[in-house]
Length: 637
Image (cartoon, rainbow, N blue to C red; front, side, top):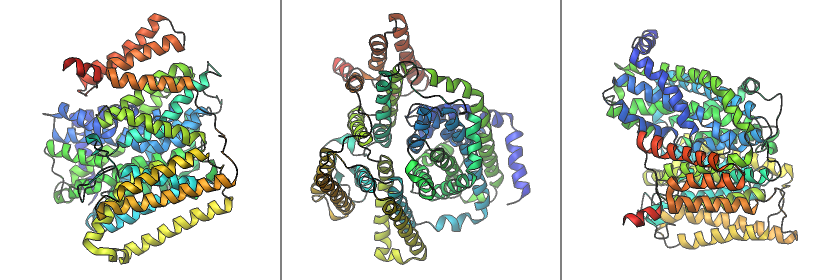
């Protein structure tokens, strides 16, 4: 690797008009795809591929890589403004980004997300450059044992993000792990916790679970806040600006660097998955903060860390994808298939005669991240005008996009029922101050942890724990757990007691899961039984502590209003019975007319805009499958 290959790659980018045009088109398209909940990088590649047939293969590849690299620069927009993650990795940004917006610091949060995403992407590209000479030993060093222990290290961060509610956080984390076990066990082909429903064989959709736990409580709070303040749903701060958020990244430059390196490393490891990086980085930010108890209330570090890791992992993921044909994440798996379709075959030749092509991709990665800053800054003024919209008028559109995101991710109508169930849990968790971040960590890491352990035991038996790398990782895991428990103990475990019914509900869920797992084959039952037993013990302990305290734990957070729940149910039923279209456009019009006292014409126009978006833009132009409801299917039958 030398300067000649780097210059050849740069020439390949700027010396070809079609390649340069592809780069310029990819950046805004990728950011828009990231800003639409449920679309994200994987689906945007699938949508783009038919338009790339017959295009110069290098131009097509540059378009896909550049687009995929900036998807997570657009993802923070809905995460921060409305509390709905653009994709699963953006869920970590919701935890502090949305509270910042509600505190009047939307501009600061967006600026921090923008700059940390850009720097993360540049560091990811730099790591890719540095790693090229060591690509074979670097990738080979991470086998199933290392993946398993890195996943356990990620699970250990549950204790960090639980704050002083350690017992509750561990309980919620165990519940997230159990949710990840739903579906067909890949080793024994045993259907676990599917209750005879075929749509659960592929597991519970991650986007649906995350939107239910995190976004639905925030969406409903929009309508509740409107009953107290019908003009502006968020506080305003004169000193909050995009520029201030960008400067925050410099003030927290060492966190940005560490989070970016974490993202790059996780991206290199095949099997961990792209969404792991943001939660690793967020947990690291909490663990290393002097004020960990303030995370979740609007700390800018809670935006910087996950966004840095989100973009830096793209450079790391390209390493095994390009040089070994081994995708580092599900998004990279789709990108790999797209590259093969374009006639570009990743493999060992990429490190030799095709090295200038790799450099073209690296330059595209760098320039895409720099261009994303320009695009973002150009549109930030109009993005921030969203904050002036009254909350009761925002409510139907946010809920509509949440339902759309769930369906586009899962592609079965039952996901709306699951969304309602997870939404209720999310509301209860928020109201009674149960940490929600541990759920996301558990559901993201559960499958990777179980798969890597089974592979390790099949190949090495329990002796895999004695490998040198395993011993180092075990020490790090032990230190992470120990440090988290020490900080929780030092803080005095000051979390409010749980209401008896919620602790009892969690205990019942774990008890039922434990009983159900006893009927599975030993290999399929090992993890579910262990997790359910730990979760049951924690939930029962919480139940006993609450009884001894003679407290039913009155909620510190305000409850959700009944009208908000009624509207949520109405939107979900409309989506199930009459589909995303025309069900949701009709509900938007009805809601605006009845709840906000908007005029008939303006309400109908808003519903018509949603209808055109679904039927013309998404269905006809982008070729997406839009669900039209059970009633229509019965009529057609």
